Length: 356
Image (cartoon, rainbow, N blue to C red; front, top):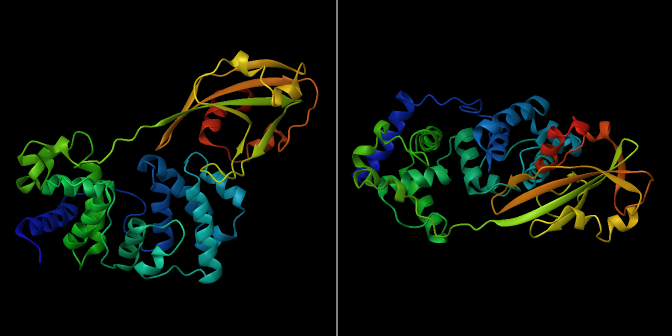
């Protein structure tokens, strides 16, 4: 049974959603589990403003799960290009094929079966179950935990095992069982537009009367986190080796976030390096010795990931003789436009005259 404070929260949130919430997104109110799943996967680790265009393109190109399952994988990766965290795209393709082939294109209609799909965790499963099938499962993400931590004054760390369990149980207790889709949408929108991470709009909050953080003047204290992430710094030096208008590239096969994407010859360092020293290193340059001239050295491009920052520098060289580089192929620049590359490299393309 809900306490008075808990009931006040649930009723106030639903009233805010019906009377005040005007946040508009193309997937709001959607009942097709495929489109809900697509939107949730795209929005993982991605701002709504950025994900919106990708969602619209995916729906246009692959309007059904069977269309996505039958698509050429390289075309899907190309459409995903720029979103990062490419393991999401790999799982998207794998799950689409499983649903198409094993389930005849029909999305599972229970929380437990949705949760079994590759790349789907408790949050995404709850979102699909509640929005598509109106099943009583509460979503629990960063927005939700922040709202709950502030309103109830919860000091348990949201990134701890105990914290994740506690917030999930609390969210499910608060859930309006007869309106799970509306409640889940409301608490996500409330966290994104009112109870924001920085500078929350407390003056506009319909829950402030009973919000512990607001009453105590400690909104910046919540949510509590167990650890602060120290990001690893990595330096990527790409050799853009060009011969007669074509470049040496390869498809990454390592099982990492950039698997199946293309790249130039890469020299990785744990700190900034002198480009002149790189040009005398063994390996690629041993093969290319006295057969190239440096055209340009780029500025430093940066890509921020959850656990690391990648600094990228591109050394554009022109070969006067064709050479062999193990694992690489020579690819015409026109063809390269149809291939998928990591965001770090596409950023270089956009700023380089030779690749526009």
